Amino acid sequence: MKAFRIISRNIRDAFYSVFRNFSLSLASISCITITLLVVAISIILSYNVNNFSSLVEKDITIVTFLNSDIDEASRNDVGTEINKMGNISSVEYQDKMDITKEMMDSSETFKNIMGNWSVEENPIQSTYLVKVKDINTIADTAKKIAKIQGVSTVKYGEGMVEQMVSIFEVVKKVTIGIVIALVVVTAFLISNTIKITITSRKREIDIMRLVGASNLNIKIPFIIEGLFLGMIGSIIPIVATIYGYVALYENFDGQLFSPFIKLIKPEPFVYTISLVLLAIGILVGMFGSWKAVRKHLKI
Image 1: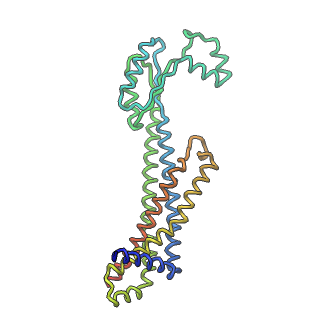
Image 2: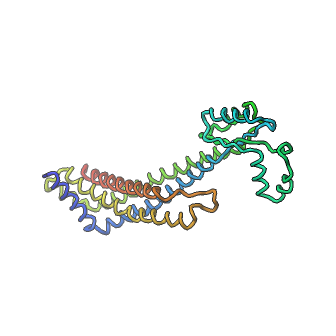
Image 3: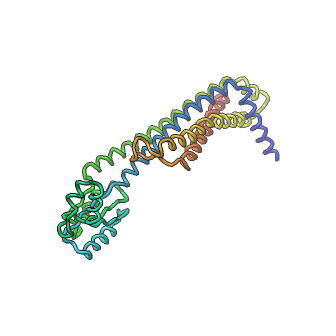
């Protein structure tokens, strides 16, 4: 019961202290708000860039052309062999007549040329559309498929795909690095701002020491105060993230500039980011206060 009263008193004192030193608290809160807004924007951009690259990678297909004279049994054997491979995500068969119909539907020119073709006259080859689990090993998978009896050739945009994958890997690493760097800079800025706030209250700390307060009793109210500053400073970034991203998603119909660049759905994405922002604000606020008070208690 005594411990509960002590904790309650410390929370109350910390809460009052935020408003009693409002001008100094406002400086800390403003710093937290501005830096967390930048972090929120960076996280949203980073995740959407990574999402776009992942969607593109998943959409890359190995087009497996079958021999023109292949029979149904051999065709099914090819499909079975492909499905046995470990890196296969999906396999879809396309008959040459279905491919011909799609091409005729897409263009009047094709319709005029292909309209009178019989099954025997049709030079188009039936295919298997193969998608892989790991895009980094697509070349090895394509080579294995090409060796299957009944397969004429395979195409997946070789050369260009490997180059695109390497670019995506660089982009992912750069965006993650930027987010980490911004979080570190944010922690440094917020921590230093709170240190300045605590430093200006050195006299208050000295009085507490003179009346016999232990170091722990001096630290706790300031650490809780840092927690409050972090919570209050994260409110605007959280609200801006939730409503701003939802508005962006709805106004652009879930895509940016092109149907190929799809945005991540707001839920639960915005709530995850909000929790991250709240955690950063609270942890950095508490750490900044603890570090500043600790420095004065050493003097």
